[in-house]
Every structure is written in C-alpha cells, then in structure tokens.
Image (cartoon, rainbow, N blue to C red; front, side):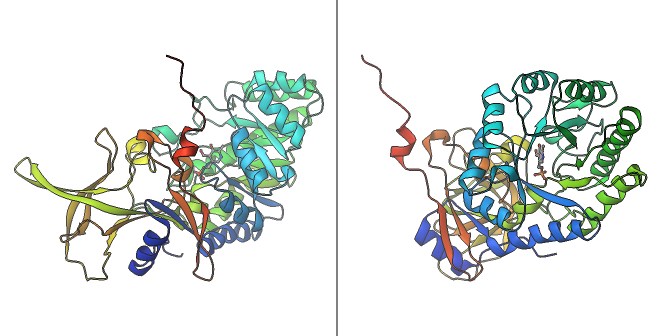
Amino acid sequence: MRDPFAVSAAEAQHLAETFGTPLYVVDESHLREKIRAYIDGFASVYPHTEISFASKANSTLAVLQIAADEGCTIDTASEGELEAALRAGVPAARCHLHGNNKTLAELERAAKEGVGQIVVDNFEEIERLGAMGKVPDLLLRLAPGVDPKTHGKISTGQADTKFGFNIADGSAERALLRALELGLPVVGFHCHVGSQLLDPEAQRSGGALITDFALRMRREHGFTAKIINVGGGLGVRYQPGDQPMPIPDYCRLVVEAVRESLQGEWEPTLVQEPGRSLVAESGITLYTVGVVKTVPAGEGQRTYVAVDGGLSDNPRPALYGSKYPVSALPQDGRTMAGTRPMRVSGKHCETDMLFDMVDLPGDIRPGDFVQVQCTGAYNSSMASQYNRYARPATVIRRANGQFELVQRRDTFDEMFARESLISL
Ligand SMILES: Cc1ncc(COP(=O)(O)O)c(C=O)c1O
C-alpha cells in the first residue's frame, strides 16, 4: 500500500512561491491508484460491481473528473454536488442523489437531469416522488441497526439515526410496499453505517443485514433488488496506529458478507460508495509558519507554531478532534534540528488549535512550511470563509510531476459579490 502522499521541501518552496499558502495539493497518480484498487479489487471478487465516489469528500471539479475518468459513478448529497458533477462533465445517468431532507425542487432537478438513481430516505420523500410523474430509479436507504466504532458525529447506521428506514421496526418493509404501491421504480437498497472505520465489522454486518432484508423482501413480496449499495466508510491512516484493511481485502470481505446473505438466490449489482478512503491520503495541505512563540504552560513551557490557515480550511480538528500526520519543511533547504512536541495553531479567533503535541523541529521558524498529510477528504469540501479568509487554492500534481492550478483562492470581489449595503 502506497504511503500517504507528501511533497518534498523543494516542491513546497515552489508551490508556495507559485500558488501561495495555505494550499491544497492532490496527487493525481496517487488518487488514480486508489480508485483502481477499489475498482479492480471489487471486480475481481464479484461479477457486477460499481464504485461510486462520495463527492462530499472532495467535490473539486478536477477530482470529480479523475474519479469519473477512472470509471466511478458519482454519489452526490445535494443539488450543489450534483451541479458540480455535471459541471465536471459526468453524465447525469452516472450520478446518484442522496439526502435526508431533499426538497421537491431537488427531486425535480434530479429527475429533469435524469440522474441514475435517487436514494430515498423517508416516507415524505416517497409521497413526493409518487406525485411527480416519471422519476429516476430509486434505492431505499436502510438503517440496519449497526453501531460502528467511530466518532459519534460520523456514525449513521445505528437504529437511532436521522438517515433512512429502520429495518428492525418494520419501516423499511412498509416503505418498500408503499413505494411499489405508488408504482415507483425501486431497484434496490442502500446503507452507510459510518465513516473512518478501522474495524470493518460494522460494514460487514451492515451489508449482511440489508442483504438479509433484500432476501426476505424477495421471498415474502416477490421484490428482487437489482442493486445493493453498502455505502462507504473505510478508514485511512491519520495516525501511526490507524491500520485500515487494504482495499482489495476489504472488497473481498464486503462481497463475502453479501454473498452469504444472498444464499445463491440471485446476483444483484453490488455498489460501494467510498469517499475518504479514495481521496484523503492523496492530498496534503501546505501552510507557511508565521509566528513561533513559547509561553509558560503549567510547570513547563509550550511552543505555539502559528500557520497561515486553520479552522476555515480544516474544521475537522475542531469538529471531531481529528489528528493528522504533520511535519515541517524548511524554506531555505537547511537540515532541520531534532524535534520536540509543539502545538500548531491557526489564524482564527477561538483557540483554533489545529494539532497538539506534534513533533516539530526545535529550530522551526517563520517562513518554514508545515505539511499536513491525508487532507484530501473533507477539507476543501468543508472549507469556509470564516473571519473573511479566502478559501485556499487547489493544485493537482499531475502524473509528470507538474503542478496544475484547478481551483484558485477566493478573491475579495467574489467574497463580497453576494452582498449589498442598506440605505442609511
Ligand atoms: C451516504 C454516504 N455514502 C458515502 C459516504 C462516504 O463515506 P466515507 O468518506 O467514509 O467513505 C458518506 C459519508 O458520510 C455517506 O453519508
């Protein structure tokens, strides 16, 4: 398994001079390799498979282009993400639309564009779709009642969730029967149990439980699911102890779980919907150090390394206490000194502590760079303009080693274009 992508000191220097910092960099070859590992790993263990890239992880148009070029369909969770996929040149028929509270306008847009599938979340949506006339193929999102071992804010498969139809309380069965009664084109079932899962047991049992349900619907109601979508969720290497299952092994595990539940009765298409595990390790964020400050802390001292970004380009440490691989690169080619634990802080109000107790060189100084690996997922897509900071640019490191700007930094004109003054 390739190490998470990183740039060299010389590349950091070049990137900072050419594009400025903070800067997101995504390595095209790294990303393509990950996608191929999924597509080939899945196809090698089951005859009908599909990998749908969860675009919430990174909806930069160039990233969507690469995913689609490798053969992924695109999972979108809003009209905006659908718009991004369409603008990236992905045919609507290769997009899926998710969402736990889709508006009628969103459903109508998806139908008008001709998306491949809408993943239906609730009874209101069934009724809305039933009143719409011609609608795309539908999957029913199921809550299998699996509690994954991950951060509470990214657990979605348990019974007490806002997502989908509960299997255990009979909602899922009632949803299917109502949709069929309305003549809706239901083609299968979906679940997504959580994210950053390092123990794949939750996805295994989630896949098995929705397939058990599909088998029961076939036997009891004569409904044969053509598609079983087991969602995403595989974790990545944010910390040395994070050891996610290799992608091909994970694909085998998912297929084994589903096959066992199918009991040889039929062969639906199996879909996985990874986001993080496709793109997180292919991206870095590059910052420039502005201030290094040592202050008294309890009995000792603490060194703060202030970088030129923070909460607005990476809200995950504040949201989930997320940790990342963090390292320093010199701006002048020098060999950096031995490391000691420091606290990396951002520029924002609040404490904006990005990363605590990270080992950085004792002689780190303003002008040096801080590289944060594994930021290809849920960083640029979660970025904001808090404190009126411009969101960073994104650069793709092409296969030939050249860097190509694919998303430029916000400008003040763009930032204020939506606003008008009141008359005083
Ligand atoms: C429905 C659905 N599918 C796929 C994903 C992608 O998950 P991950 O990035 O963990 O693979 C998510 C993430 O929240 C999701 O909600």
